[in-house]
Figure 1 (cartoon, one colour):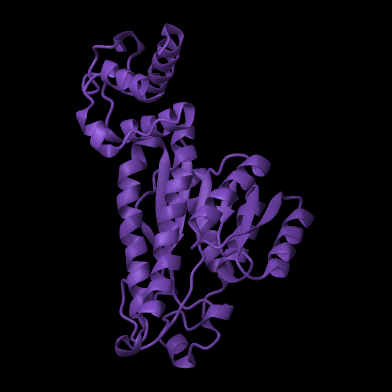
Figure 2 (figure 1 turned 30 degrees about the horizontal axis):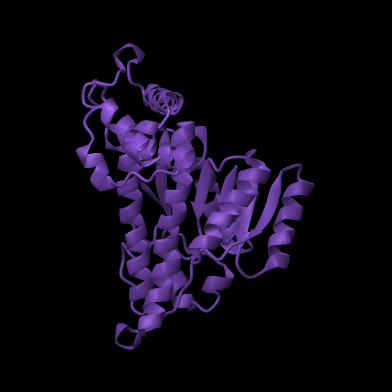
Length: 80
Length: 237
């Protein structure tokens, strides 16, 4: 996984979170979905976007394990 | 753009015409009846609207995916969906075969779920969407000889409520209409005694239902979600 690719993943995840209504200033790798007020429907929507963009499937079992923005970025990077 | 399934005749055709009159580009879904669907499209075009006939067997998941891809390419994202396609296979419960149970549930309930799930992708992205499911007074009420149909339509109402609650905060509404005795090909064999039981003392017209679907799909109904609007001349009252 190149740095450029990781940056692209971060960009798409961050943009999606902004669309969901998360405070842009609070979005970083360590931010939790709870503090960003991102709920399960948002994460289901994020999973759809990730699948379309990267061909990576995020199952509901995976979602339960995801706590922070960094968790989801790393998961996509590991599977892309 | 709005996709109406089962729109070549009856309630579906009237709904397609009403939505087109309200300004929606309409994808007219049909399984059988390409000619009738073509007629609906021509009528809409003649009134200055935009419409497209699309062959769609709603019980074929891969086919439904293709239909969405095709209509989204030609008419833009599906921002409203009317799950109208439905079938009957009446019999007393003792005599309903597994096949007749399955085909009614698959067409009336499972296909409506599958199409809704597919449509929600674009609606959530757009932060706007209207899903209207055509249920029935049969389901909330008993109707001997229609256990399969009643189960499917009661299921549609339950599904409507729950999906509505899931997506409400994203600007997507999900509602149902529950037609009573409406004069269509599907009810041509219904005995007159049923009509006599309607407080309005007449059968409904497809346009009566279409007008309610049009309302639920409109901006005026933005705060209406998870509800079932009975269009039955008082039958369920």
